Length: 509
Figure 1 (cartoon, rainbow, N blue to C red):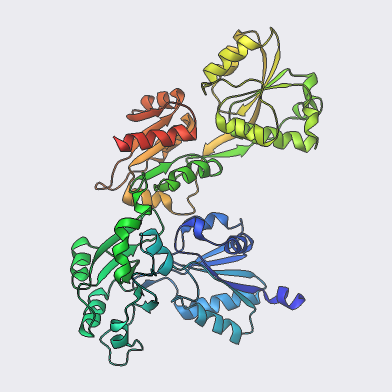
Figure 2: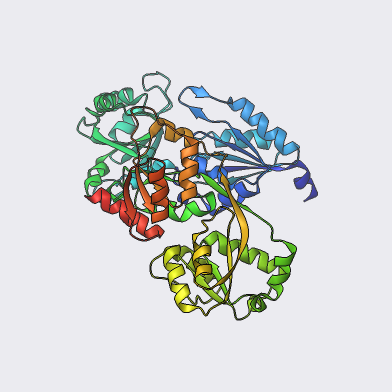
């Protein structure tokens, strides 16, 4: 066991076909533990967010004919890092043993005496057709599936592919990495006797929101690809199962399919909105404009936490961040939630309420309309004069709630638990993608996201779509108008569900 720790270990890990949800649990676990991550072009860059701070990240991708590192250099890199005692994850698109040269890398590791583990992944050869509405087998159409490399020149005399037999085979044929040689592949199959009317489909960036599909026949598909400018990465499906696409095309029929949406929340908060949008087919660009920086409480406040209910009658939460950071400080002082005492809890917003509910805390007051103005109105009507109120919040929070509660007779003490700062990092390169491709929609959930987006000054290329703006809440809308932005819609309620319902309603018009 000590020798394994000394020499390190290499994990040949399948990153799946592209959709983040299709990566295996074992793969995610290893990525989070890795000392070194070596990844390919077809790996979803969102995976990089799982890499722990301090780990080394190496891009070894190949796009078309351009390769960052040669295969020999990759092999040497894996061996050197493992010999240095590091845990190395070699992340490969799809499955490492399906046309991914994973077998060659494993051979080199074995010959060098490096311990390794292979973690299979879902290959695009089966996932992309499924997301395009094409089952690879079907009792009425195909009982066999053949996977073929598309890299090999069909015209070369010493081909390792039995083209005559392949052409006559009635089952489904899947060509990977074959877009550049599509015309030669189709011609060779027809020369060997395949029916020119045989259905063919291409699926590009399968399982992701960037997915594109193209249908034709062996006789027409090459011309259609050239006319459309259809490029790699894509797989080619040949067979009668393609006929089922018109009936089974579930993914490209989702309500937000074809819509690129920018989400500007913090990285920690964006996932809930991203997940909702992605489930409806949207291509989501997470471009956080702000990050939350926790601030420590002073000595007096920390002592107050020990006997909180002796100092306050109410604690008022206006954001999920406030809940997280307040109780993070609280549990540093006491591990027992009962030490919160008899203090009453007020909250605004469903996300804030969810955080409190997760702690098994009862909310004593929550307005039906999710605004701080309504919260102040309802709380003033509920509390007695001179009741003591603790208001955990961010440093840049609007003072209106505090002022209104004080005017209404409350004794308010603000506890500043975090600062909101501009997000500087872009680990997945999504900002560059926005500049090149633009977006159809952008969502703002707070004034700070608006102000920091404005400061970023990201400008898409002239022919890219310019995003329409959806705002959450009147304060956010006011900030947008102040900075000169035109708002396409304001969500009726200050909730993520309301944001998503708003975009669906606009698209359905």
